[in-house]
Amino acid sequence: MFKKIVGLVFTCSFLFSCQQAAEEVISRDTANTEAISAAEVSIMPKKSLSAKAEPEQISFTATIKYMNLEGGFFGLISKEGKHWLPLNLEKEFQKDGAVIKVTGKAITGMMTIQQWGTPFSITDIELITAANKAPENKNLQ
Image 1 (tube, rainbow, N blue to C red):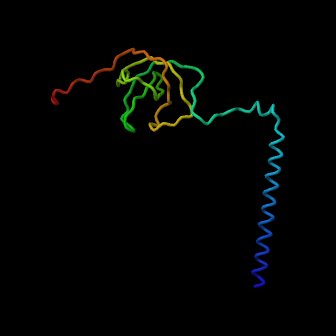
Image 2: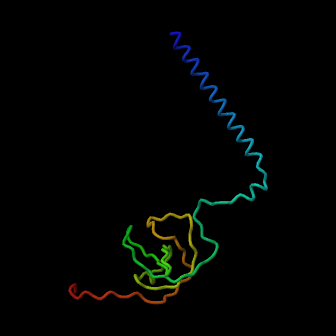
Image 3: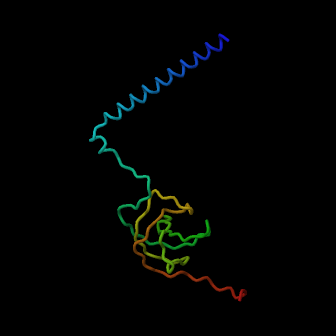
């Protein structure tokens, strides 16, 4: 019985000392945090966790490609080979193989179910070449 009581007292004192050490670390970190001046805070980089548009618009020529993934979607492949995921491609331009000139903003920090390309918000679009029509299969008529 004596061993149990000594063990209990030892355990309680150990836990109490750990708690005091943790409180000292927290108070020391709080003091260091308060020592940061307003000038230091203003030079720290600011980073937003929400999706946002890049400040500048970009223009490029791309081919519209239908992707049969995740329910199907249209993507843009630029002449440089970069993949773009248009978020607001109008129905009249949703033609596999069409070549377009597009202007808009890249969206950063956004996840999509397609997980393909950089999300892109279109502000201006121009058709350069219409989509190539596939030859009709006369056996299906």
